[in-house]
Image (tube, rainbow, N blue to C red; front, side):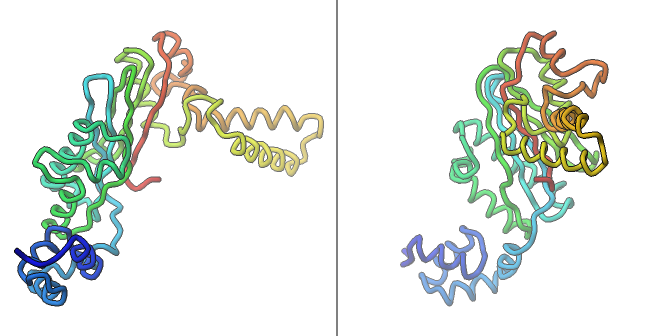
Length: 279
């Protein structure tokens, strides 16, 4: 048995930028000798792994998985080029990660990396193996899980030749498939939406926006007595931009999201929205 420890694997990974399995195999071949392991990696063509580690993974896909209608996950998986995003192996990797997240009821991104996938390997190891095989940097991006009430998802392709790059996860307090679908598409079409209700917007964010509105209004030379009303109007427009329940429906602009919810007798509990390449 080769004479090396987990610390040796980590050291070799830090030195070479290669994946975990590549490092383990190299240490086995070199009987634990770090220098010989590095030489082995270079001979095997893994030396470009270090370069991959410094590159930017700004492409990729968004995928989701539901556990019935009571829970769901939304996952962003990143790569360097849209060519790899089209790769079947890359898309299968995303599906395995999503399934592992559902199977283990993973709460956050870090826990997902250590979760075991169906083939007995950790998500982190699956990503490293795929990165090594495809020869491109692959990394787990954002992750969200919603559970309770009624959960649904919506994935959108911005290019028919690419996998979905925009995804939404929506949680209602009770089942209403039609309303949930409309809300998911509303959120997908409204990139500025960050909050469900006005009350969720942090006080410091509101005060900053109010201060800016006041400065703009006064710089325009508006009468002082008219400033408060104009500022409130501008704050209202700000809330309509970032608060879901303040918006008009994109499906029917004559109808508000509040009225859509009232008609459906449901409330929104939470949502998540990921688009590849956007924070």
